[in-house]
Length: 418
Image 1 (cartoon, helix red, strand yellow):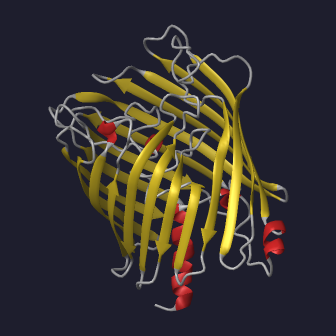
Image 2 (cartoon, rainbow, N blue to C red):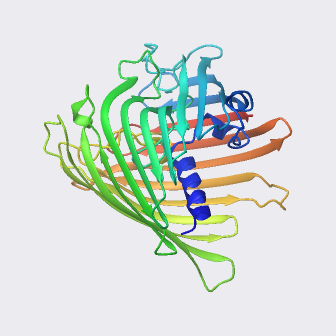
Image 3 (cartoon, rainbow, N blue to C red):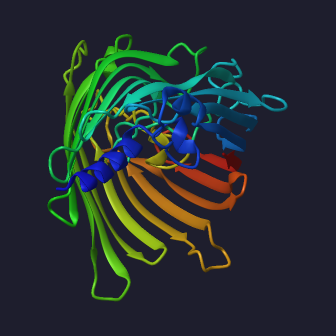
């Protein structure tokens, strides 16, 4: 592989795993001639997100209603001698009355809307790219691996999840991206005032992907979580993920596919005897902006412990009502259908996307029906001379059988990024 292609692959890998404050701007800063130029010629960042969320949940006499504003401001330097840096501060404020349980305000008579008020350092890292085909990033950063099923930033919530540690990416081998991360602290969405707002860890993340077998991308991973105060979250997960797409005979149609298997065992100070599987099959069809997928996902449970993914972007899986943030002891089997339509640039609806999904959720062990859920969303993005704006409407309806209670949630979001 040429050095140019390696460089492109490295940049893609860096963007995937350590999207940072600079990713919120118009693009990465250019190399500077001097340290002063690097410090003064960077990119300021402004990221505002106003959201209304409503929750109607059986078992509560009152509905929850929250209007919150997320404000994130920061700066990303240019690159000098392979060095660059970025930082961002973040504030989440409640506007109006707090008729909801934000997880730390004590309002337990309301359903939960997990966006507590907080002000904190969201991002602070230094990066070195002076070694061939290598990036080293140290500090507080966003890390998203693959589809965020095991490691993600929980970007939907107002306070995103970030990681303190060192992340290295290397593309020296042909068509291969190697990512290693050491995480000593996880900054969770609940903020600094929550009892478990931070998780102190000695966690190792290894993710290796290869595109030699085109059109299939092969990814192998090992995630070794050593969580100090919550030993039950300490696990070793080894897995293999295959993804790809192929042209079909019909013009414009593509076959999409994803398959994944992982094995999870107890690790470090976890006293449980964990030996559980994760399985995924997800075929799909794409035509122009239309994408339809069917999926079968299993997180095993043995009746005592369920397959755990505490660092994942959990909101993206098993329905938007977030009923399964922790896998039940009997595991979970999710049979789902997803469809989305993204309108092209020459359409009157350009920048718009509509999506719907349905989940049939059962216990892996015993087969009990947990319930079902359907979700719909509409979003539109705008590019202006002053930055990017967006608006989104999302609705989720969970119909409970044996797990949790009937719940309906509504979100209206307006965002601005510069």
